[in-house]
Image 1 (spheres, one colour):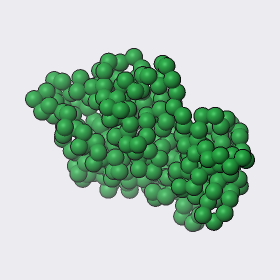
Image 2 (tube, one colour):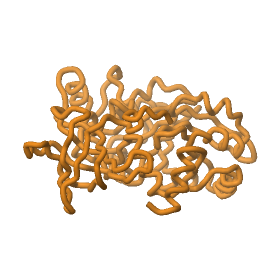
Image 3 (cartoon, one colour):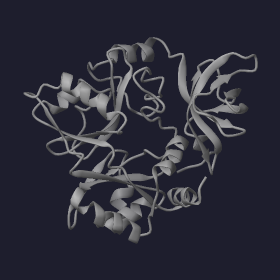
Image 4 (cartoon, helix red, strand yellow):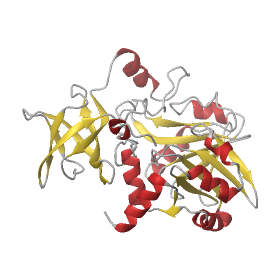
Length: 335
């Protein structure tokens, strides 16, 4: 791990760090049927969202497999929906196919609306000092709730759990992003890069499209129920039949869980039990300063948390233990 990653990681864990997240796709939905349209496409209940609140959700195929994971923010007269750059093409393809422009419209606002993430135990204090919003207002916000800071320029501040430590996304016009980045640095935040953010994401047990799931993975296999991305009470949406059947009458054969290894873990490597039975495969992996060699992996349900497995890496076997996510839970660490 490089020195730069170590400094940024320490800031995110102990103080405050920031990262430009403008590579994410941001879409604004408007129209009389915007809520109903999104409700018919996503796993979570958009219809009950009130302005100032939001949630995590997924768009699925009719067979219940994941097209994209999204964050939905309800505003006064619109909905802001964003997703990772990797998931963007598949989400846009789905929207072009299913969104009726006479009932709801969506616009790609990624070029004009930037996204800056601020993470760490002192993120609220840093964001408050940089935007003029009261720290107490920020620290008491529930996940995906958001407020507007109206200083020299309007900034939408959303509380987000993406890196497993207290965090906020600042959504703001592109022409004020540079001054906001400078303000965050002036108020003590350390800029981190994508590699550092990825270590934190893996520690938090949050899967990433393309790395940990895609259109071959069911929503519950990727632990979207654990992440609060699924409503089991709302009306129909694409893929609901499969999601409901798994939840109420069955189970998935594998789920996304954590691995803690005796050495670095290799993406794509198989997991095997002591008798040689293959029971899963490694996805995202990292060498964590806090938890050591860790990875997200799909593990068959008959393997219990705490069980030992062998990782069949290209450089040789590595021993690992299956653990529940997030990794902080295994050491009783609170973000």
